[in-house]
Image (cartoon, rainbow, N blue to C red; front, side, top):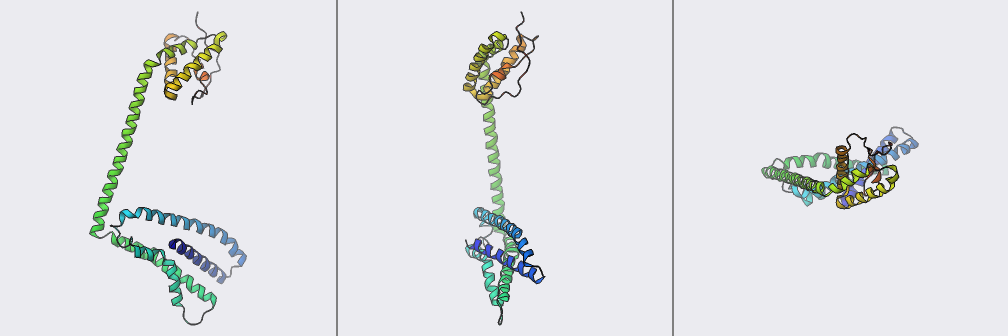
Length: 271
């Protein structure tokens, strides 16, 4: 909460100094107001990203307390987050003699800007870098990186084992369905040669077969049965043109969708 308040105060001081500089440069108020809207939006986005990064680093920073004993300590963090507010005191101390309100606010804003910049941009990165040079910090960092690498490798192995189990299960299902679906595949092959007179009855039978396949193994089972029926058709009626009515008959069963519907008339059984 203190960090949020300090960050907002820092943004207010930056905005105040920007407006003051533009006024001293001779800019009119209407131009300053026209620029302030876009600048405020951009500043809001930058502050949001900064706070997100800070809070994310705080959430994951418990692992590196050994590597950064100073910058992760409570006194240092308190000093870090309150840097903009401490800048108010620095600016107030720098005021000497009698001043008007504009000078007073300028000193406060400049003190906030100076202390915040010094703390966040210079002191904090320098302190973090010096901490990583200690033997304890380097040793802990190497162990942490090695542990992270082992965890990543373990996750990769688990993913590969899961994929292998899924592929093995799918292959087992395909071999089992190859025998189980043989009678239905032969029925569908015969239905593909149905004449126009019995076409509606053939469609009803094919729908029933498709529903059983969907209930047995879902879309994969339907695809395998569909492929088996077409292969059997080629073996039995190799000299006839195949019109894939099965895809049309099954459209809407489960998640089966017919992507291509042939416009050719149904094949006639050769007499």
